[in-house]
Amino acid sequence: MHMKTKSRDSTKSTQKSTIKTGAQIVVDTLIEHGVDTMFGYTGGVVLPLFDRLYDAPINVIVPRHEQGGCHMADAYARASGKVGVMVATSGPGACNLVTGLATAMMDSVPLVAITGQVRTELIGNDAFQEADTTGITRPVTKYNCIVKDIKDLARTVHEAFHIASTGRPGPVLIDLPVDVSVGKYSVDGAVEMDLPGYKIRPKGNARQISMAAEAINMSKRPVLYAGGGIITANASEELRKLAGKAHLPVTTTLLGLGSFDQRKPESLNMLGMHGTAYANYAIQECDLLIAIGARFDDRVTGKLATFAPNAKIIHIDIDPASISKNVHVDIPVVGDAKAIIAELIEEVEYHDRKTWFTKIAQWKKKYPLRYDQDSTGIKPQYVIEEICRQTKSEAIITTGVGQNQMWAAQFYKFIKPRQLISSGGLGTMGYGLPAAVGAQIAKPGETVIDIDGDHSFNMTMIELATAVEHNLPIKVCILNNGYMGMVRQWQELFYGKRYSKSYLANPDYATVARALGAVGMTVEKKDDVPKAVKQMLAEKKPCVVDFRVEREENVWPMVAAGKSLDEMDGLDILESMA
Ligand SMILES: Cc1ncc(C[n+]2csc(CCOP(=O)(O)OP(=O)(O)O)c2C)c(N)n1
Ligand SMILES: [Mg+2]
Image (cartoon, rainbow, N blue to C red; front, side):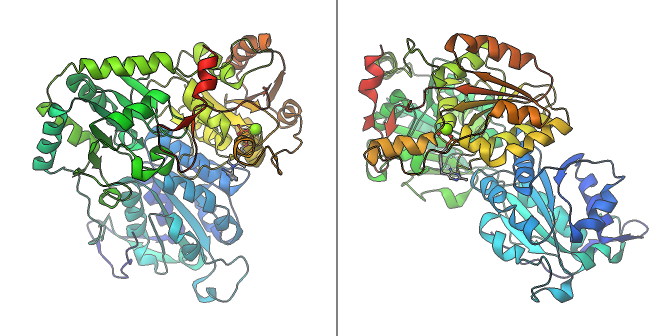
């Protein structure tokens, strides 16, 4: 969505006006929005802003790279439910935000990014550190704009917070030329937003909700498919009540993990490419699929033509653009998931659905997630199970991307929302460590663990210095298989084991950690895993544990790209371990 920012003064004068610089207007507006923590990296054209931040009541966390800072702000938002804020300078600073913005965009994370820009009169001149930031970031933001007139500034910052956090949330970027930051303007008390084209429909259509309830009541084989939207909408409690009252099995996407307590018998755990066999079979055999806050991503659906072939589909989502985008939807309900589920609860009835639940129980019994318990080496899945056991399923888990991420999703049992913080849509390697920093800053009292891949960690490991600077007790568990494991798995399965460029020598991570001021440990023996996890959890400093895991372990089951959900590879391997 890209609205034109009107250049007219829509502020209302209700108080005596004060003269402020643009930079001061920005800082004051951030404070007005309750921002007490933000992330930022300095540079020439943001000096006026950093000068105003020098003694502002805002804790500014400086990452070692703007990408890291953007991921920190993103994870801060995911962990807290607040809007994350990131500042960067023009040109290289702004360009370094791109991956972070795209990550937040794909996962619908509320973020406000403010970038400095060269003086208005120099724009287009290839000025020093000039980049077309709004042009570059347009496809990776929900909305962006450049403020060329100081009188638009306060309103634009208010609008940025509003757009970032309402409807389907997402990142918003404001580009701020330095002459606007140093310019002066007489500010009035109240500022009104001016967004005539931006409309949100929070309330679902009553008739559609009744139709959905009726379909649920009639269904013999329903499945509820919950996405990250449940967590964004703070609707986990409603989801629990709905599943309980109507007696529905619940599967979640990667980003939906934590929206439904995985210890409950109704939980089918994650679905999709590396989902459980029982979730995938249930989807293929259900007669009603109730999708809430999910978007039918290809990693979830497998081959679209054969996805949930027998099901009527209900889709509840705040974003009208995602309805019937990938699959045909029979009953769409557009609006806020929390409010809609609350209404649905009123209308649904309990049915025991014995045959259906018996069938699901049989699948669960036959195809549980498992791994070889008798291995001599360290199985990555074992490390995660041990972390889950010792943290009693209570930790906040961030991840890298690849096998580490999928095993974390499979073997940590999530019980509450905002517990798993992972790059789902974009699949950004290097997300895990800065995300752990952002999450720990948002939740100082909680245990935050980054379950990472060696090569994912390589991408942003310098942010360990940020964690050390702020004394954050984050834990990093590197499932070190030496490989870009997920790439190696695809090469093993689909490219005749030709491991083209998926192996690179790694540094000794314990030494790297110590050099940066953190605690570093190396675990090479299976028997040492429980002790190492215990020691790691007791650490007060940032702590990196390099688990030398079995190098060619694969993630099972797997729905190969383009296959149907019920065409899973690896089920025979899982069965042979019974
Ligand atoms: C920034 C980025 N570059 C490339 C990829 C493609 N990719 C996906 S998984 C993967 C390998 C990940 O290796 P590692 O972090 O060691 O995790 P493992 O699969 O071994 O657990 C690669 C290269 C990506 N997802 N992100
Ligand atoms: Mg690896």
